[in-house]
Length: 53
Image (cartoon, rainbow, N blue to C red):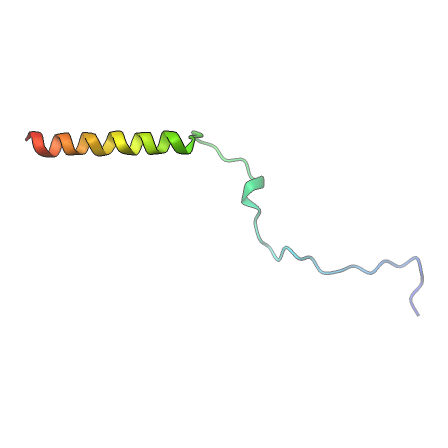
């Protein structure tokens, strides 16, 4: 019979999954607005190059 002092350990529920929001990433941090602005500027630049030559 088990004693009252013994603790029953349950299996871990993580199963090796990585919590990505806890990890620190290196590199530039851009807001979504900056990404959209850079994309639009790049698209306009490509159109200008396409039709100028």
